Length: 210
Image (cartoon, rainbow, N blue to C red; front, side):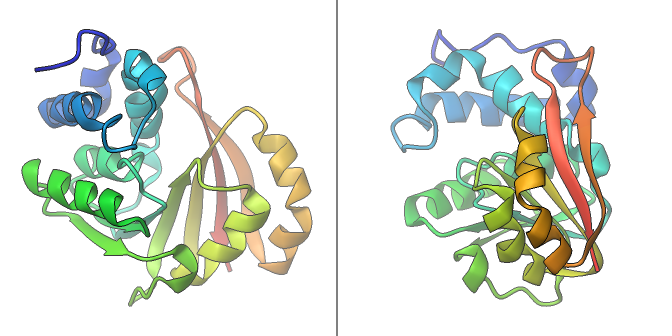
């Protein structure tokens, strides 16, 4: 049974997920039912689960390339599971250190039939991925100055970092300027997605790994 406080599914969900919207709906419902109990989301997030979380992640799907994408600190599956639903043509490695979250991710990937998902229990700095990843995503993990050095070693030359960030991403990027230079990142930009489509736009820090 879906909690009555779960936000009504926005009309834009069908546009973002297409013929896979049923999977997104099933994931949102399960997260609303079990997310607080498992420590994945707080109770205040359920009434805004679709717009603030599910759609916020789904907007990133067009930035992904066919290949292997790692999601660092995947947690509740935001954005990893959401993107795996939206992009079945992309292979995902969900990297998460906490056992109960790994169990959740593994169970949801199986329940939803996501054959394009692998779950790896590890911290980003300890994760062993071979070959290196084409892209890495992360959402609400840590500041750019810490996140960039943790994730660059996971990505092949020419691959990309795609980090979902809040309204202060510009200030974060300025604070990480030395790290960005030291890690030889290029094509560094902030991409804003969803304007005119969803109430809360998605801001993505995007950079190419040399």
